[in-house]
Length: 428
RNA sequence: GGAGAGGUGGCCGAGUGGUCGAAGGCGCAGCACUGGAAAUGCUGUAUAGGGGCAACUCUAUCGAGGGUUCGAAUCCCUCCCUCUCCGCCA
Image (cartoon, rainbow, N blue to C red; front, side):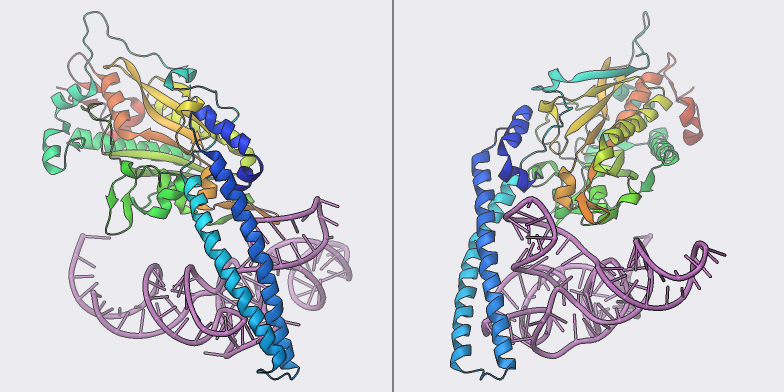
């Protein structure tokens, strides 16, 4: 959520930031609302001060021996009642405006960081780094896509998953299931050794949690909902982890807090009909290990670099070639101020594919979720950062395509062997 | 699901209508004492919002919302949450 004070004092700055995102918003309305709300608050608090004074006076008079029913007291009572009435009226107005303002603010996205390159769409994103050598088909070699490999090896059952649930769900079988589990453990261990605290949070989350991280109110149609319970299936561990400290004040000395959380993630993928219909790329349910930092505002830029490096460490350990792309202002997610996407090389498909998205959200989520740190006498909003480390299904896809052999088997990278228990899948 | 108890400041805990944002204690910070420390003493120590260059000041907040009253932590209503016991259950 954006700062109300900034909205009152400098709406032009907000307009400029939203403009860079390509978001057109009726800020005039919003700005006006913020000013009116403040004015009403002023009026109200003056009246309340007057009312408090009268109340105190009545108390003193009675204590000093005045008759509780006497003229003097009676007059004050009438005044008090009058003020109370007016306060009530103003409060009602104020509540209405406040609700409107809140509603408008909650659907405004974060402002891009000054460091974020300006651009309109994906096409304007900036590649900042490449690692590894993408595997290309050798002469006469036909590289398969991961879903072909998986089907052939019998490690993913798509058809029966439709029976169990519906399309865009998969069931992993045998070595497929084992590989997924191995990847999760491997990633968590890796991050733990780099200073992250492992977290296994609830994956049903309440409305406040989704609002805190920015998924609600604007993107309700993206999440699965248990409508009898005010609970939703979490679309990413970012949601429960943000709320892990919702409403808290954290000692500056304890920052940064670094968490690595494995959760299944659930997304309705509304409006993606026909895209990535095969394989492990786009599912209603998928596994992800998420990295999350709560940090001091002064350190968040550096933290963003570090978090991204920590995600990249997994790709490098698995010897998966990737590129790092900085998203332009027009391609940023709702809560992000700045984002690096990591795209892994899919050898069979012959393309780079997003496998991680590492964002700094500045104080945007912290304001929504009221997460502050104590710095001496003051409490201030801290900064939150998140990034996939990594999306597990897509990692498996990349591994299958990268490790495929002429004999139809798949070679497993050395780092994963202790977890997977074998260096091969489907070795005859 | 059934029965009961309870929600007050960082924590413990007092407070049943009137200068109560809230006694007391613990914790924490500063100062004094000390060669240094402990112990002791003194002082300070919530959050949010508004106004002010600032000192400061006003308002709100005792789980949440509503009501009674000139005045509510305290009385009334509704809701939420936590804990204990029983039942069921991985």
